[in-house]
Amino acid sequence: MSETAVVRPLKIYLVVGEESGDQLAAPLMRALRARLDGNVVFRGVAGDRMIAEGMETLFPIDDIAVMGLSAVLGRLPTIVRRVYQTVDDVIATDPDVLVIIDSPDFTHNVAKRVRKRAPHIRIVDYVSPSVWAWRPGRARKMAVYVDRLLAILPFEPAVHERLGGPRTDYVGHSIIENAARMRPREGERADLASGGAPVLLVLPGSRGSELSRLLKDFGSAVAIIARAHPDLEIVLPAVTRHKARIEAEVASWEVPVTVVSGEEDKLSAFRRAHAALAASGTVTLELAIAGVPMAVAYKLDWFYRRIKDLNRFLPIASVTSMVLPNIILGENVVPEYLDDGANPQALAEAVSPLLEDGPQRARQLDAFARLDEHMRLDGGESQAGAAARIVAEVAQGSGRSDAPSA
Image (cartoon, rainbow, N blue to C red; front, side):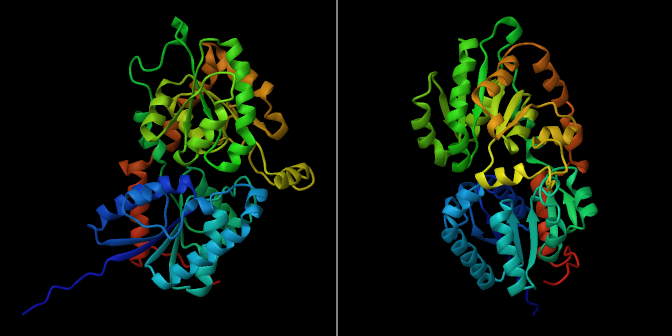
């Protein structure tokens, strides 16, 4: 009598450190379940979306979701403890693959220590650090502890090949797949040329440290903009965990603000919006795909400001912009303002013309129309599907690079 072999479920350990990683991990989980007929178990450090998929988290990601050296230093004992707690749990779990997703300051510290203590555990990094803009030497160092790198920007595989980084695959970007949900349906975005009331999105970032640096100046900029556009409607899509804080702070602004949260309300706001004032980050690419012209601001942590001041002696960037649509298009079409340059008057002067049917608005919209062809994934595969295919290959032992030993 023959016995049916029992196939052990693949054990996949996922580590995210903030909202951006959670957004990628949840659809990856769904795609892996579909690809492996449900024969998979997940464990790790999870955000809200992953938890909604049924995964328990080792600890809340708010413990580690900080940005900038001063913010990190303020929470350093907790972050260090969480790194070692995660490493210990990965070793105890002994997964078929460890997938680290974004947040390199945390996730890469986990991966390095796992590679030293358990070199047999395969490691996939989902989202490349911005080696094209900052510390390019990281690429070669990553090849020691990362078996495969999944890139979400189309120019990154060539960058890692040039810099000696790990084997890198472009897996597409979910923003392109969600383009139809972000772009306005007929009549949804008022026609400015016909006198429609303008809608301005205010996007001060998803991290608490970003809110601390930008929200006050954004409020002052909005007050200036509203004087030139008295019929202006202002919408602020907030990450759920920061909504109460944001509502409390914007209550003192000179003009009323509608604070929304949740994916559907955010997408609805994108479809209605005519312009945006945004923190630098992935949201700038979302806005561009949605056809929303913008001005972008970024304020560095105090330590990195000092590094920036030394930049004429020690170049740190190989790009002329930190705004993703600008980098992908190879054209600095979106204005960006850094540190002291990101003051309310400058931001207001950049945003106001975008709320009118004029040349500055048209220039951005014309450029954004070219993004689809730059970012579309060949073969019709989804981002989550392409990522799941490679993660499964690595977990099953057929997709690991010959990474040097640590």
